[in-house]
Image 1 (cartoon, rainbow, N blue to C red):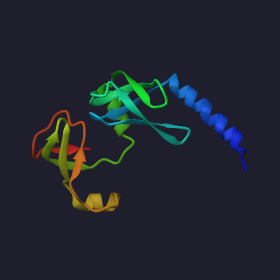
Image 2 (cartoon, rainbow, N blue to C red):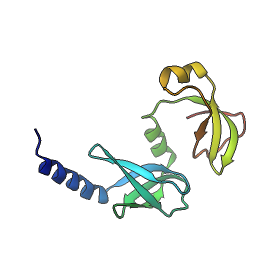
Image 3 (cartoon, helix red, strand yellow):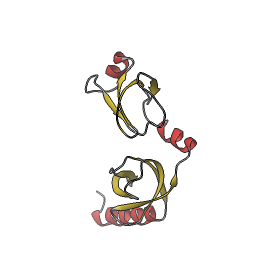
Image 4 (cartoon, rainbow, N blue to C red):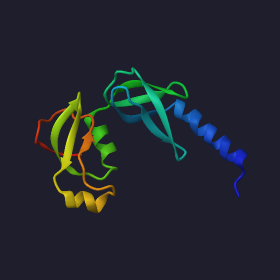
Length: 136
């Protein structure tokens, strides 16, 4: 069995290292940004609070991460490659860059995720119009 003291020391080292590194995260207005440290998800309030988009953040305190710069399209594409991709049809703009969308293929969604087929909020849509098909 692993010593709890060693685990806590390792987590403290990883947290300290996080303060000196930068991470990529999506951010919606009034939302939070997240990253993983030693298998644990850490959540931060972004600075500035009104930022909306993809950003490179650096941890300032245990609760705050500051925006260093906006992420470029290549960084965002690399990040998104880690997730399953679905074709969705934009239906209605909820506010800002957030749209309500519906899967183009209900069968595809049923096979790949649980919870049934339903409208899905899609954040950070920079370009799009009603009924346009997107990959998200």
